[in-house]
Length: 425
Image 1 (cartoon, rainbow, N blue to C red):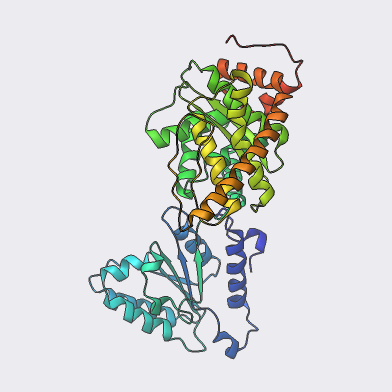
Image 2: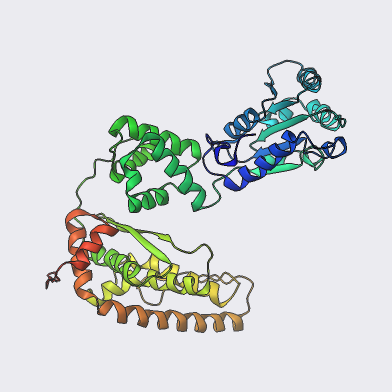
């Protein structure tokens, strides 16, 4: 039997699922397993989830690892029930075992409602001497009849999705290695790339890497990857226009970036970007689980941009509204479970206060507690950033000139000899 380290090498990620599948493979390959125990082997495994995450690839690669005869139910016949029965009859005649693959089982059942009952009969029709394993995929798992996918028919059910950053990291690193991209040696660049690909399917990520390779070659930079990602989402190549970045925006984003860089224990700064219409600071979490400390820190990070503006300009720009809303939302979640929206009492804009299932007394209590928490952390952040005015100015000046800074570039700025740089008011 193939060793675990070589098992399903063509499928990137999904390590926990691979461990389970490797165990199933071991049971089927175990010639010493007595007849009685063979009766309890899982005879059906269902892989489900949104399109584009590799269900079909996983099924086909897993089937190959058995060295069994493989039968694929295509569903092209006019009489699907007859095709299904014929397929299983052939599979059961294989002395060394067989695999039956049913791709998009939900689509087939929708196509012919009789197929559900026929399939149930076939899945129930195994005796102790039959080694037939059914591997099926489905996009719409929750639309499948419970009677069909119950244990005894499909004993293993796996949702195929990118579960966490570790899965995504494996996929990205494997693709970088496959194409031999130089970026694979840039740890911070890989971390930021992963952050930008969080909402992508596996198929979209693979297509993106192929396109980057064709357009830029193996020496493609992180900016090339981000540019191609922009092209995928918008249909045009981002020509990286130069913007006249307002000083308010530069100082605001410098506040976020510097606070994460110097004071955050739970987040790691990756990049800060600015344009003439706003900015964004990218960071990645260092913690697997959300804690009270990490939530408090998120409040401080949300406040850091508007506090930087207050330090230098003695007032807040209209863009502070979103950050303050985020800070209040986190603070309310720490104080109660009523999902009450916050009130902006620092910027000129007003928020609608929408209490949910709380009395007036509770609402007043929550407001007082939340305001107290916000003010406490406001003072903490302001005290820290006041000590970093020179670094803030240096970062903001660079943002005005080049619109974007990586973590590495900010490191150089902070380590460089600080100069007295002051914006003209």
